[in-house]
Image 1: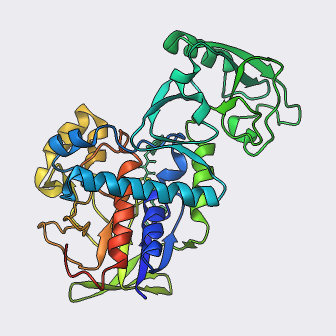
Image 2: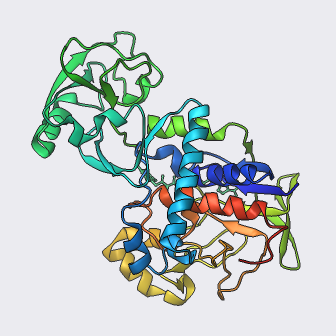
Length: 380
Ligand SMILES: Cc1cc2nc3c(=O)[nH]c(=O)nc-3n(C[C@H](O)[C@H](O)[C@H](O)COP(=O)(O)OP(=O)(O)OC[C@H]3O[C@@H](n4cnc5c(N)ncnc54)[C@H](O)[C@@H]3O)c2cc1C
């Protein structure tokens, strides 16, 4: 049986593990801590326009796979179906698909697009709320959420007939915050004949109600992280043993994880997959870091200039891969035949954009599939 070691406990590592196990591999996931996945707002953005990405973004991880849109669509269908099933088994139900996109309000009443959302968020799709009365539950004791302002924003920005309804939870501490609501039973508001919107975190929501999206720290992210972390090993990989173009094992303190294939799903800066600073680097294997196809070492001050104009520019830097998701070294060569990279550690796309979860899900899924077949495949 092929042994696969996945480094990273975010959504990319989870999808890699799912796919590798489905392919019959013996999978171990190691993660040192929660990463960006635990902070997501509650709506997974997978992709907006697949054909437009393939036509106009040559360095995007989807384009670099060299697959046509039909094959990519099939793989996205497979990955998302498997992800939804696995999360459902762990008690987290999701709705939506990568082919549909809804708009959902966050706790400030601002709208965010998403392809997949928790079932507790889905009834709050803004277009579906049109013409309905929406009661926004405010909690008297909570200082960092103002249901009246959110209701006003929903009215002014989205034309929704929203109004605040304050309830009291006396057992909350003085100057409580939204995080104090996590895991509590949802209070029942008085308003009848209205859809009820809750700040995120409550359990046992009544029918005809929904949760708003979060800002960090996010109850949606925390629930997701808890579901996907089941069974992973808490350890920080600090080095690898390599031999003639292959990785043999990963080391964490005095522990050694041997495997036939390795998936690096270590995230961007929050996850710890890349180190920022004057020059962005990949700390574990000194892999190449690229910005729009050029090594960041070669770009020099031009990248700093771009970042000055737009700080998000740096988030487009990351690892680059061949068609088989093998990460490249600085010269553009594949240093390790049994190493695959997935998720936000990859560059070439807008991290906080329409593929925020799409890149980790699809590249994780494919990296896990190909890692499981490493002894069968010579190259792709
Ligand atoms: C605040 C915030 C809000 C966001 N909101 C959204 C949203 O609403 N919708 C959306 O689509 N996208 C959103 N994104 C983007 C999305 O969350 C990320 O792109 C996605 O979660 C990245 O997943 P990942 O698995 O690649 O990385 P991560 O989730 O960061 O996981 C990386 C994992 O690697 C582990 N790791 C790293 N190095 C090592 C090591 N040496 N040894 C062991 N483990 C290691 C980390 O501990 C972590 O477990 C948001 C991002 C942020 C920061």
